[in-house]
Length: 243
Image (cartoon, rainbow, N blue to C red; front, top):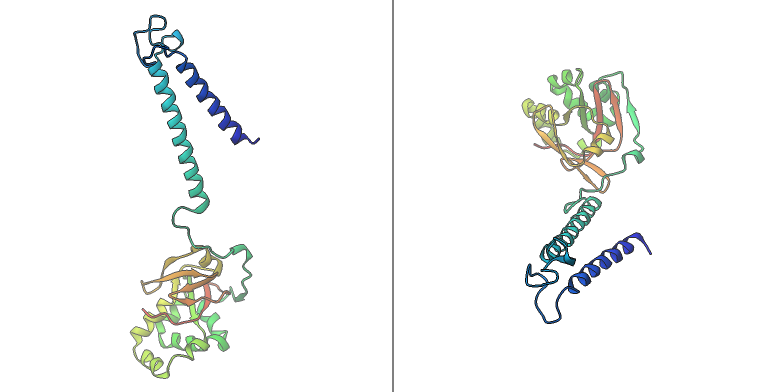
């Protein structure tokens, strides 16, 4: 017999005992045990004491109701704690189980790191060069996290769109700034943040989301790798952020 069953039996025994004691005081000819007077022998008192039967019944009832309420609230709290409440947060990848490749060069700034991987980022490096301010930004102390669309992604953008972007320096610089997060974010940091808006160098925010164990920014997947730089991190982004 487990402890919970023993407690239930004890409560039932006490309740039945109290009911038996009170009912034993009710006269055979009728009447009520709640009366405070009218009984020559006990005068409506519980077992002849100074406590009335009414007080005994009231106290017992309140005690039982209070115990049931406390137990109900306790169970509710247990369920809420175990399920996370009515709205459970999305399951995130196990950060400690992630095996993220570490690339780059922690001794060089983001601009130099991107320039040093031409087979992957020569396209975005060319756009950075067309926005002179971004060259200086990605070389300064930061800290920044640069979301770099790789050559394969930029290769899917029409040449006309790229030419129009290069012709509009203001739009080009803002696009590159939207790809530059304020702060250092390793891949596992992005995972830990869950769903959140992240501030960019342009002053705009971009939406970080998680889905099926993958990380997305503005709906574009972030490749699970960390490319180190002296002033932050670089991540391969499978898309171009449009704001």
